[in-house]
Image 1: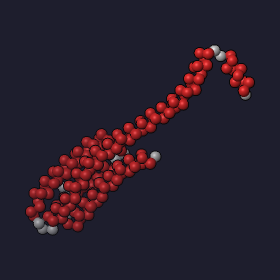
Image 2 (image 1 turned 90 degrees about the vertical axis):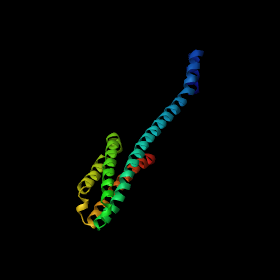
Image 3 (image 1 turned 30 degrees about the vertical axis):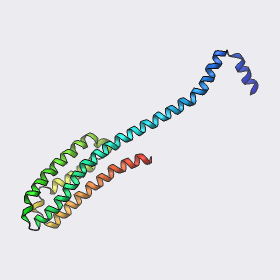
Image 4 (image 1 turned 45 degrees about the horizontal axis):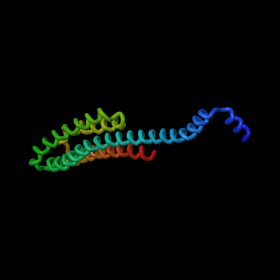
Length: 169
């Protein structure tokens, strides 16, 4: 092996030896730079996805808070306190606006975050009882709201689980 190496190096000129030695030093650095760049790209993509999730969750937070308030006010109204009628109308308008905001975010990020099916089911639940909740019994209204709120919490968990999965993988 030693004779082979000596015979190989004796046949090449000084500039070629310099190039060969340079390549031996540059190659490991190139590999390290490649993997460093690849890791950086993964981190950037993770941060982008995390930003999408945060924006989505912020919009869902507003829907969640208004749904909780609506549940309490509806229960009071359906139990006989008519003073909540105007407040309910106001919170219903706010809920419709909140849902539109989430729809816009869903259109932007739904495919990436894989939330479209879950969001459509949640929206469908609201559409089924949202406008007719004042004709329900207090228990029916409470149960429907609780199911709707559970759907929102499940979607929030789904979005955060995507981020956790990316970290763990």
